[in-house]
Image (cartoon, rainbow, N blue to C red; front, top):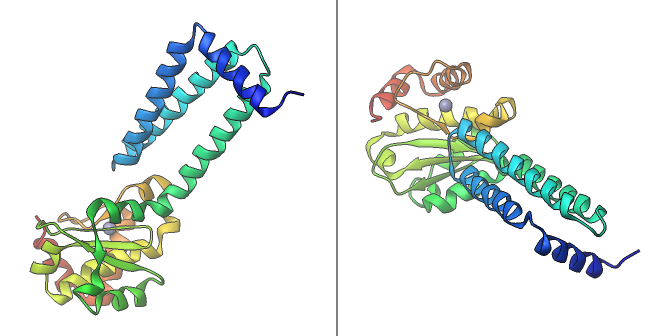
Length: 225
Ligand SMILES: [Zn+2]
């Protein structure tokens, strides 16, 4: 039984001497690029394509590595298993942690700094949720995980009832996240100008209507660009 260091040295030597080295590097590079794209894109279909692409490239890299190994092939299998568990973990946990990336990306701040009732209002509708605001003149709102994001532009032009309509709509999404298909969880749940056609959106609207009434919900929608 070789030590791990021996395994690593052998592994590195085998890859280094392999004719397949350019191919292995190409697969690894492609996989990393696709994974970065996966983290960045907000379109569900692009997410699934880039994730599948990253996985396929990595499997290519691992298969090529496996075929060049002259030392213990077990090590390649161990590397592969480690890779599978890490990438599966990311797939499972990323939707839940995505709001943290969004807070950073939008430089968002807790809404309690400027609107004192918003957090309390949302928490009566969805437990453990939080509201953040971010700097954008365009009125928009979206939800991810347990967090609702509202733009400064929306805070400026929406009155309290209209804002409550948007927050109630988004709070419904937070409450029913577990019913939402995973791909949809990976995309942002936005409040848009257009009257929704999807069932989940209609349900969120119906909920908001129950809380604030039809009028603020309609006028909130009209104020969107
Ligand atoms: Zn919605």
